[in-house]
Length: 173
Image (cartoon, rainbow, N blue to C red; front, side, top):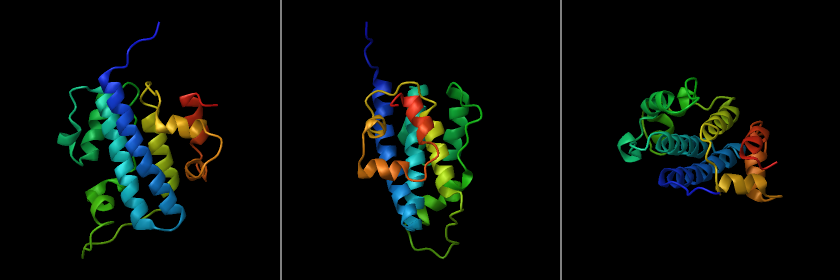
């Protein structure tokens, strides 16, 4: 007997799908040395996935009210989501809104720093967030990992050490 899909589960998949598109954008931009665009897309991806994960675990969560307060959302997630006590997103992705604003707007403030570990950190944070949600039905990520070969799949898998773990979690292998 199958159960009906709950609205918060649908909403989570919508957030995850949006996060995936920014995630792929961040990976592609980084691989082609477009650092500002990579930083912005990475921040958007992790923030979107964080909001979606909160929506899943806390149905009273209003993502619009959460705004861009990633540190606060992360603390809330650690308190609300099963298995999220040690959940980490490297602070440089959201600290002082740098990746969100300095990557897009001309400013006299210091620029953005992209560490050597950027891609590995992004991949791990994305994968860890996805794995906090047991409901993974019909997502673009699942379809991408289950696909044979495509440009998008290559963007996802190139130098990504988290792909195997994600595929196992999503049961695409």
